[in-house]
Image 1 (cartoon, rainbow, N blue to C red):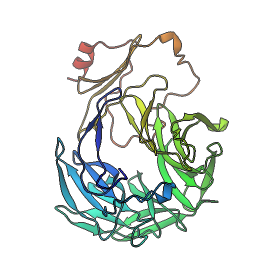
Image 2: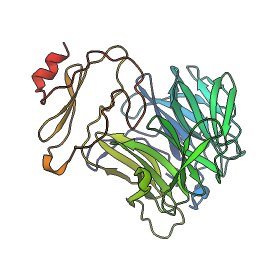
Image 3: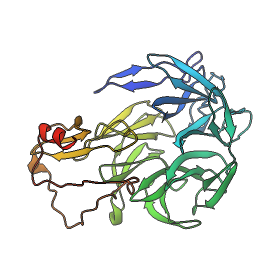
Image 4: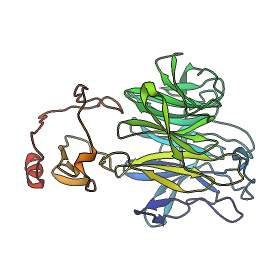
Length: 375
């Protein structure tokens, strides 16, 4: 919301093309980070100049750097200012605590970056500076990692204020995005628009460039594939392994601008969603058929049933139906393949937890049978 007197809002998706305004947490012009922690939604505010995206400089100079907790309707509770920063770029839960990255840039008094931990009320504790402006968090194999602009590239948090540099990616000025795909961390970069697989300290394997794009701003794993959103054309690419990256389309077609960005991605309700700048539109992609549970599983043992019926998919948690796909033509989907059946590993990562009473049925369970199986 770049204009004078405007402020960044949070919106909740209500289906089709409907978005519900959840209010403005702060007076700054951007809400730049969202994260769930202990069942609550948190939002980080930022001052976004516009200059970095070759947009007009915003007249709203109100500093961000605060985090807020959503309490319903349009009510937000101030959880405190993070140091003297103007921007909050990431929020993530790690080891039961909420962490935030900061990345001050154009228009801010100083170009500073660091990581902070939320310690309740309005207290944020400095937990180190990995050595450059921070891009994205990624939690993998019980460790917190962060992408870093400049000389550090990628780093792992060791506790206290200590970060271990994990190497500089080839031909990279900014390590911008991260996702876990097939059990390994993948990193999106600028200025070559290349994705690299992290193979251990100082070891990075190129997974190829996304067309002729310069930056990979967002990544997500959806229905068995890794997707990346780009700059400057605002395109989305799908990773097809040895075949490289397939362009699935340009999302932002704003005329007469230098940069178009696919800035964010999320999987919800069996679809891949992508947010764009400067158009401010959200797009959704459905590839094949998928269902997803849009809430995290509660701690303890949970009973899951996944059903592929003749013309739809269903997902049950503890005997309750939590997701159902739309009806489809079964003839349109050929599931035959020569791949081994893997349980506890997939296109995301290895399963972290315990399993018992695993069963594979010859036919689709009814709703009553799925409920009975959970008892």
